Image 1 (cartoon, rainbow, N blue to C red):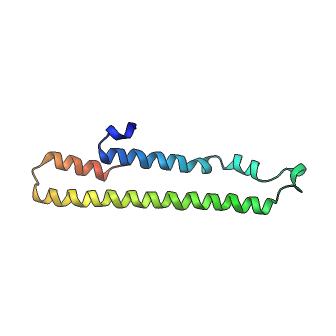
Image 2: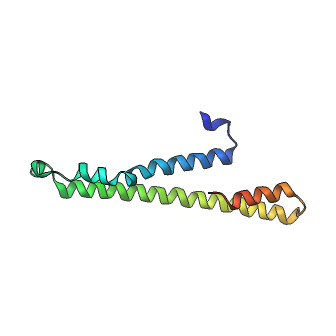
Image 3: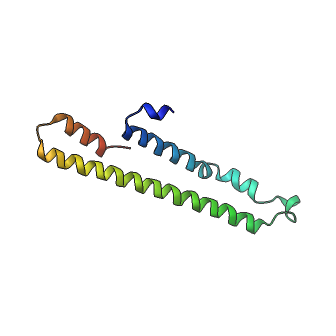
Length: 109
């Protein structure tokens, strides 16, 4: 709901940043994940460590693939906006506001 009052490009940027933050959770907590995934000596016979590690690996790969897709999409969207702004800038070289908007898009983090 908080995103609905923001300009569309800012809203999309904030949403992408939030998605990336959430996706990093598994990376940021990898030591904890490993400690809870690999069975201790008392649980060795009750848990298939190999299967559990495969599931953790697949979870990491899925998160990385999803994150990469989002980043590439963000880059493509930003590139498209920059291209459009450059074309507009060529037609109106005296437009300072347009130049500022172009610079802002080019330096987006």
